[in-house]
Amino acid sequence: MSGGLLISLSAIDEERWGVRTARASGVTAVHLPDVLAFCRQEKVVFLVARCAVSELRAAQMMEAQGFRLMDTLLYYSRDLTQPLPPVPDGVRPADAGEAEAIRALAGRAFRAYNGHYHADERLDRAACDAVYESWAYRSCLSRQVADEVLAAAPDGQITGFITLRLNGEEGEGPLYAVDPEAQGQGIGRALMAGALHWLKQRGARHMLMSTQVTNVPSQKVWTRLGFEPSHAEYTFHRWFDE
Ligand SMILES: CC(C)(COP(=O)(O)OP(=O)(O)OC[C@H]1O[C@@H](n2cnc3c(N)ncnc32)[C@H](O)[C@@H]1OP(=O)(O)O)[C@@H](O)C(=O)NCCC(=O)NCCS
Image (cartoon, rainbow, N blue to C red; front, side, top):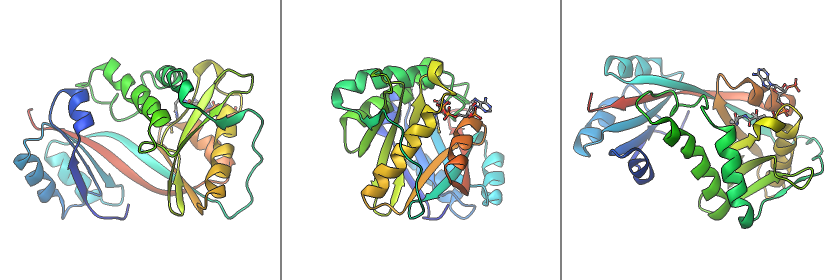
């Protein structure tokens, strides 16, 4: 991943996990001493750190420093200047009054999810589930969290959603899910098709998605819609009180 090192304290994580928490991305072997110095200076207890899979030296140095691998993220990109698939009926913007239904759906879909929080045995299971519920809820209510939330409601009842962000020519769908009992019926595909159109209509030239290497259903949906592999990252956790 390009873009250089970013490291900051996270107030939302500190409240969630009850310890001083920081997040770092773009970690390289060269940056790692700066990351550790930041954590010492800021008295960080829990660090979430990401590095490109191509930065194998950084990953090995983190292992030597007591960081533990929690997941591997694959990024896929779709060229929006190429023809897009049609959007099936029933995909439309969610309104603020549907925030609670979407929060509850996220809770069901992401229970015991294969992400980096659930992979860390030190983190409370219910609190890990709540990460996704809270993120989905805030996405419906705050344009600082998401520019739009699309809902799939083929029969009137919401069975899936995708949150969208637009950063100039790049669009992304940070969070997406289908209710467990409605999965495997093409709703994930319908939401992604809706997302591609929404972003293209607002000037994006490509859409970026990411998921754990273990998330086969997502990758099936995306590759069938013309997404191609872009890059990948490792997520490590480091607890400084151990
Ligand atoms: C990922 C997700 C949104 C896909 O939604 P969906 O409505 O089930 O998607 P679709 O029905 O369009 O397609 C999913 C495909 O994956 C397949 N699939 C489902 N579970 C699978 C598994 N464990 N292994 C392999 N394939 C699987 C489905 O059968 C389908 O393929 P098919 O058309 O050949 O049958 C949904 O599974 C989900 O919400 N999962 C939990 C939360 C999540 O992972 N969110 C995405 C984070 S990036």
